[in-house]
Length: 171
Image (cartoon, rainbow, N blue to C red; front, side, top):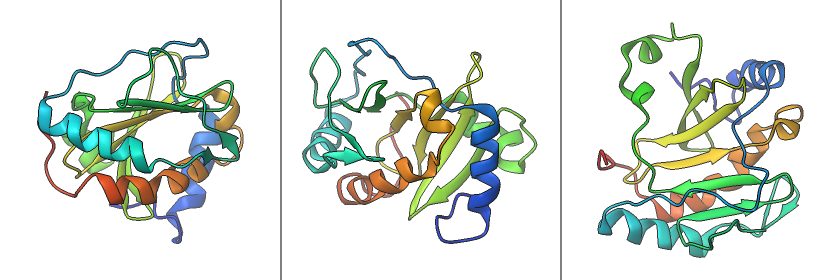
């Protein structure tokens, strides 16, 4: 089920869901937890870091502390990307696959599949699926009030270039 397709009819429903609920957890401070992936995943993440855009959703690149090839950020409050995170438990939850989980939904935007999860604080987090490394994107609430799908569209080309389709390790 690909309700996130950028150029198909599922996007308006996703945009409404995100706008109504707010979007992903974002760390407004200058620091972010750096993932600890295996060597193969870390190499893919370094490749991604090299091709990430300088602007996402019109926001300039401003990487969080500590500086790492596994993290990136844009704007303030920041859109935060973390590469090499572990597989979210909801990714293998049968309720998500059936579309019956009220707190998680899967779909695709511009050729990249994502899991969108509602967090305990009411925000959302996006994690790539069907890629050899998990990439997580957390958005501040202010982005959710706009078109947060634009963030995923802006990141899609870099993710497709650097992170091959496949099965990620389950760290």
